[in-house]
Length: 466
Image (cartoon, rainbow, N blue to C red; front, side, top):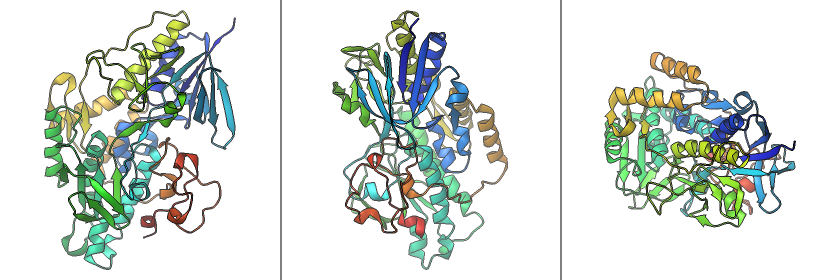
């Protein structure tokens, strides 16, 4: 009997759930291949814990071979899909080109950092969508605070201890909240210039933090952030980024060595090359998550424009909650085309949201019930543990140790700026140059404007050298 070939591109929330569910539904009667740049699933909501030393990096990753035993893993980045020939082309970690043929295809390629035409951002800002970026930020923050006390003047000390986060969505709020606690811990035993304290700024063009969530969650997060000393500025954006700081749209210049870019995400550019209708960069699908005109192709997660059955005319937002559920629906519908079960529309019920604010603080509204304080913190961390497909005991153990012991603050030097560029379609994959980089800065490189996921980024962050 000929076994159907199923290829799943991407192992984020949608892709992992698709592979896990489909391996159970197919009952060994299909060859399932998962194409992904790394060998792990990354639990993105816990990245702020990694960037601030609460969790070790491996805690937020789950092995794909270890948890998907009936799924063949192919390491590589998809760079093309031929819908007519039923083929996917990719490049493996060693730069070798490969090709996969399929009978059924699931596109769950996810998203990347959202770029805006702001001068200097691509050169001086860093995203926060993958482990390389989180590890870089952890080292970078420590690298700025530790030498601040020995800075030649108060202005340099103040700039090193100023951290700007652009974007007050879920990611930006989490980073600013955790980051403030982290830097306070770093300076607890070391005096800075004339009583200077670490400063965190959180910027957003919206009129409130967490603009996409319930206003009560927004109010709770805003109160915690301001109470912790975070300078929250709504209705404000970055006009220009420079090596010395950022210029805001109101004309104020903020001296800083750190600009974290958390303004949102964009669909993976792979779907734009399919030649199929898009909705704001996302691939249009029907309520069964299949691509119109290609019933053998399904799409889910951030790169898919999935009709929202509760809000006609709109698409479901790009959230982990939707991606996780869409993955299960996609798996059932692929299995249905193989004769296992019946296909189903994607429907959802809002289970609420949680925002971890560090320490015992959080904002949550499970099933629409607004919570704050330690209770919200317990619910939020319980939600994270329940949502993770592995490593629960290790994560809980790290949280316990962080509550009982002082935070460890050391520079590991594992990730440099050049290996975690902002402009990349795969933020979870470190970018190592093919050859030793030239010591000059690539701002003078005539190829510096090429998309970094198509070239090796040779830029070293000047702040890494200071």
